[in-house]
Image 1: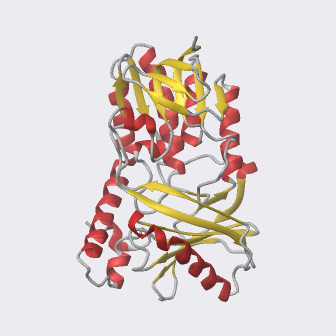
Image 2: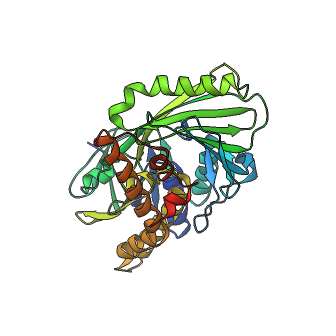
Amino acid sequence: MIATLSCDVLIVGLGPSGCCAAAEAAARGLEVLGIDRRRRPGEPVQCAEFVPALMGQEVETPSAVRRQPITEMATFVENQPADCRNDFRGQMIDRAEFDRHLLAEACASGADCRFGIVLRALDGNGIGLLSNGELVSARVIVGADGPRSAVGASIGQVNRQLVETRQVTVPLSKPHYATDIFLATELVGGYGWMFPKGAFANIGAGVVPTAKARLKRLVADLHSRVLDEGRVGPEVIGHTGGAIPVGGMLKPFGRLGAAQVFLTGDAAGLTNPITGAGIPAAVISGGLAGQAAAALLAGETDASGSYEEELTDVFGGSLDRAVRRRREILAVHADNQNLQLPDLRKTWIAYPEYWAA
């Protein structure tokens, strides 16, 4: 006989958005079960680990997870000298430690968080089949399961536009306090980066899926470039990669039978399509989803619509602009036109052209 679990809220995915949803819902007295396919929280890290200081999207990062402050952004367009701006500040964090910190808060609030468990199926009545053979029934399901969300797919919400990324971690030769951004015609639909993290640096790039085969070489070329400049060492300490949703916000709620579904973070398409920044959106949307679940189960019939409105208020403007700029640059690529420097500048937040109407 198959065992059946029941809970108020099932959270699929225990990254930042899932843990924040779990903490908020459990703190309001709900029975919360969180599951994650990974065996250990925070690993593997699929993140450049930069948390920008964005007005209206502030995220608290405990001192224990901070690795260094970022005081400026240096943007390199093709082989031009760097354009430096000191109004794009933030923190480099240890993402694995950050995830573990948020998990501890969720567990302290009373959430039951389990790792090494995969959601195998989710039927039209909201009944989930887990990889351990158990069935689970919940009144609310939160999809915090990333850009290729199984929960999102179950309600017809799929991130159809993605960027593929690759990143290596290397020794940093001397202190550096800027996020270095590299824009080039070869980096189709994305950009390159070097983000310092104390004694190390994360070097990576993102491109459209059709250019994925070039990613390894593109990142190696970028590593060689900053190595030749004497800024990093030759050793590759680690590497990672993954997909980032770049199509903008999906409808962040739906229903499966009697179960209400909320989507958060990458699953809801909240990552910025230009910068790829997703940690603030994950934390904020996760917290709001946990609050919405509690409100819904307390009898607030408009909780789902209110959740969508709050996400739109916080993220809608920036996402819409980023989607529009991304569409413009991809149209130039599709027409096989020669990209000019102004085209590249228009697609990056450090330049006035990006913010123009």
